[in-house]
Amino acid sequence: MKIAIIKYNAGNTQSVINALTRLGIDPILTDDKQEILSADKVIFPGVGEAATTMNHLNELKLAEFIPSLKQPVLGICLGMQLMCRYSEENNTKCMGIFELDVLKFKPLNSEQVPHMGWNTLKNTSSPLLTGLEDEHVYFVHSYYVPLNDNSIATTDYIHPYCSAINKDNFYAVQFHPEKSSIAGARILDNFIKL
Amino acid sequence: MMLKKRIIPCLDVNNGRTVKGINFIDLRDAGDPVELGEAYAKKGADELVYLDISATNENRSTFTELVRSIARHVDIPFTVGGGISTVEDVKPLLEAGADKVSVNSAAVKNPGLIDKLVNAFGSQCIVVAIDARYTGDRWIVHTHGGSKPTDKELFSWAAEVESRGAGEILFTSMDHDGTKKGFAVEALNRLSQEVGIPVIASGGAGEIEHFTEVFTKTPVTAALAASIFHFGEIEIGTLKKELSNKGIAVRL
Image (cartoon, rainbow over the protein chains, first blue to last red):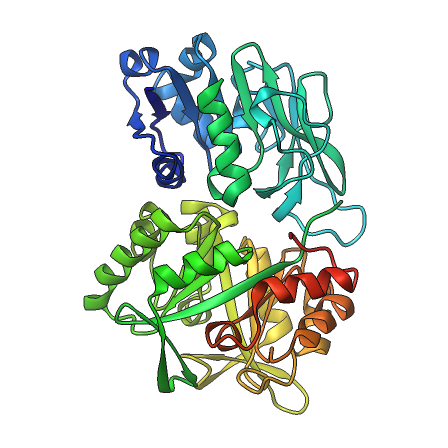
């Protein structure tokens, strides 16, 4: 099993590598397109700010390359947001794999933003999330994807929103499976087995 | 279902070992930081904080190696801090696998550091730790492990920290720290209502009831403690079950 983690200024790649290593997988971290194309599975991590990161992906020509991939791809956190069409974070045009827009959380009462900590998955409906209904995973984000037809999980913070999406071979999660203890390891294991 | 309150064990690290003392005096050995962290994660800790209390230039690479080892073994988020004063200090720690860094004295001395760290790494990974002591009419911010008073006041400094982009505030009441008589509930309540970012309560936990109190009487999203966990006075699993029984939302 060859797992490629897309290398760019994504922040948390070491955590993703560590989590896969704990599952007995030895992933490769690369921005080489041939290497990525030859992988069985691809992980697209992300921590940071949308506009800067999209610029970087455009420079590396990854912004047009990633949507062309045919094997299962898993976007994580900012990775999920960048796979959408547009983000309110600095008015950023994203890759558009999903016809979805990313919005900023607006507190209704005294809720704090970012949404930071452990929250549950609801309405799970994909092999990626088998066994994860009502399980806790770790979130850190200020922008979110509203409920939509591509949703494979929802979470409630301020209001219910979409915390995981799937279309064809593209999967993405708003939370950090690599930091979500046993539940997170299960998701990564599910992804490996897709 | 909703966002859960977080329980965060804090590990002070001195030359590669977990230690705990009162005000850095009479340090007791509390074990291997990686093993301890792994055990806490298994017992249900929601996050961990590691503070390098021996932080000096020659020790920094040792601590970075330790962070690398923690990241390999611990499958929950962890924050590291101690002696961080530049963007260059932070980069190797995040690259080694830390999720967040906490800054304290250096941010008080040079508040622009917060903006620089936020620009370089993002709000989500910048925690500003604030140590303060009540002087009868005001909460005065202290630095250097709570030993040096400054001209800053807790609530205005917290507002500034938020406006400079910090993702989280870790507030320790020096008056409560080490007393085991409960958290600084009044100050924590005001602080977490005044700022729009998550506040971690620290200082004073001695019994399970203290955690119940801080979560029912204030909107803090997390509570931190050290020695009561290290020396087994409170077991994390038991604490979280008790909180859940009291109707407080925790991850079980």
